[in-house]
Amino acid sequence: MKSLERVQKISKVLYVLSYIVFVCSIVGLISGFIGSICVGIWGNSPEVIEYLESINESTTIIRKVLCICICVTIECAFMIALYYYVKRFYKNELKTGTPYNQSVVKEMRFIGILHLILPLLSTIIVSTIMFCFNVDLSMSNLSSIMLGIVYIILSYVIECGIDKKKKND
Image (cartoon, rainbow, N blue to C red; front, side, top):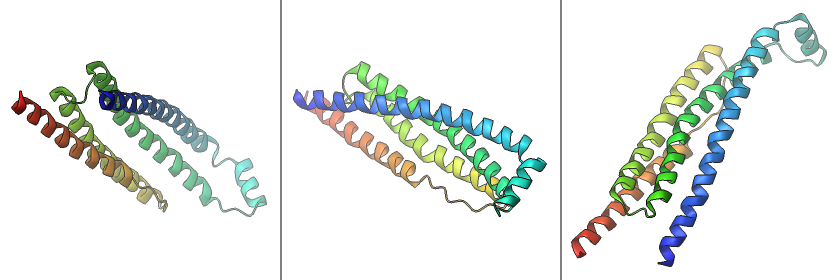
């Protein structure tokens, strides 16, 4: 069963990667939150305004930086929620020992749905904040949405394999 061993090795790598993304999202959330507070407190201080004028930069940059910090914090919060479930999924798959299990397929489909819903919610909230701040930034969650579609399709393919195995037994 070399192919199952390969699948399990891939699952282990994906578990480690999802754990890294989870931890980085926590760091990003904390950094964005601290950045938002710092810009909110010191952004309009006379020293900062004087410095911006000395480098020929508009004070609207403060509003843009505050908006970016808030948006990063929100994006990271959604990533924490998403990758909590993703890393849990891979941990459960490794514990089960095979992707050809009905509970693994059900959880994979749930992960796919989360990959569709959470990025869309995040984009709506972040876009609203950017509109309120009158800031035009480019943020896209298309790759996460595509990944959600792949998870859902893959769950049906694996479920088909489970059904065929049951029929053959």
